Every structure is written in structure tokens, then in C-alpha cells.
Length: 288
Image (cartoon, rainbow, N blue to C red; front, top):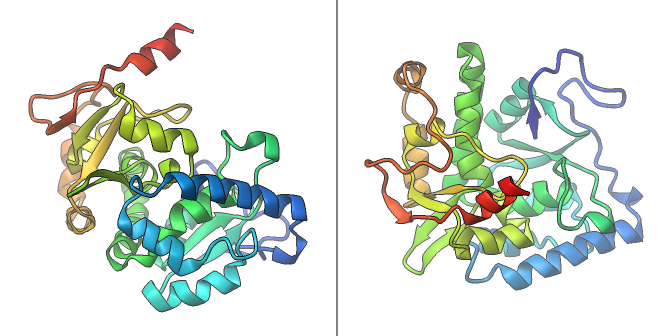
């Protein structure tokens, strides 16, 4: 939910930290029905696909009780479990605002919901992506600590001018990450669990590479913002992800400044290859 290049202050009606009232009472029946349609479709699909931490968080927060969740209600349980809360924002917010919220265990979420004709694709994240996709994982103490550490690291990256590298870490973990389990790879990234099509593609399609997570490798890898991913990185555990990001990034940034990007579909000799993808989907799309 961050966007760089914002020099102006918050929009009219927003507070200094860019938060707004959710306005839950103002949602229409049609908007609640969109949430329920999306929720029911995803929850039929995600067992045996999403990781246990996500599914347990989804149950703990009871995100389907009355359509679009009321942030005041779900924050009671979220605060109890991990000290996090969800705050409503009017859309994409400046990077420094986004990182400051994360660093203080607040997740900024959009409060609008997509139209019925936009169930499968939306350019800007809406409340279903932000709350259904992201918030269940924040009930897990380890992942909750990772998100706070990421926010603190983001504030430091802004000062160093290294935001592009750090954004790749967020993309390939928080948004499109896979977790290795005894039952195989499972989804924990919000961009996957909130998408019916990518929940299937990320685990089942032969096209993408699936590689073992390596922090610097991830930070050197560009990503697709407009289509299915060409590579997914699989973490061995949430604790491993947290441990990797609690180190001082200063030395990493210095090495990254001397290193070039790795082509998005490349496989290096040093990669742990879980699936060597065909890249057929990307090739077909490029030819259209």
C-alpha cells in the first residue's frame, strides 16, 4: 500500500498520518455481497494451498461474519494476539508513511471494495486484498515481527536510497511468498491468497521457477507487477524469514550497489531449484 513520489500532504479528510475512518456503516448491501462472493470463493480453494498460519488467522479473525469486516471489531483480536491493528487509508500512501505504520505495528488498508465486474483483477489494492490477503498472517507472532522489522528497515532504506531492492523483498515474501512445509509448498503471500487464479498458478502451473529463498538473490530480482509471477521464492520457515531480515542490511546494500540485477527468469548455479519452470506462460503473453 505504499507509493513513492508523494510530496504533498494527506488528502482532504485524512489525518496527518494519512489514516481515515473506515466508515463501515456506509457500505452497501451490494458491497458486502462482493466481499462474501470473494471470501467464499477463496476459502473453498485455499485449504491444502494456503499455509496453516494463514488459515488459522482467517478463522481467528472471523472475517466473514457480516460481509466486509469492521476494523474496530477485528482489531480487538488482532491486538490481543500480536499487538497489531488495521488502519484505514484513502489509497496508496507515501513510502515513509507506509513504513512508519508497519514499524509501529499498524497495517494500512484501503477501505473501498472492487466492483462485481472486477472480481478477478484490480489495478489498485482494495479492502479484500489488504484485509483478507494480508491481515490473517499478522495473527502469527513470527510473521508479525517480520512485518514490523520490514517497516523499520524501510525507513532506513529510504535514507540510503535503497528502496528498490527492499521493495523486491516485500514483493517476493509478503505479496507473493511460498512456504515449504512437510506437505509441500504452501501460500502465505497476500497477492496469491487473495487471487483465485494465482492461487492455482503459483502451486500447480509448470511455467514459473520456484526457488529456495536467499535474501540477496531476492533483492536483485525484478518482479512482474501486471501478471502472474515468473519466479516464486520458497522460504523454509517464517522464523528463517525473520532471522534473515533482522541482520544489519548496510553491508548487504553495499554489495548490492556493486551487483547487477538478475534476469527475472534466470536460474543461477547457486540457486536451490525446487521447480525449473518452462516459462511457457510468460512466453505466450509476450507473443500476444
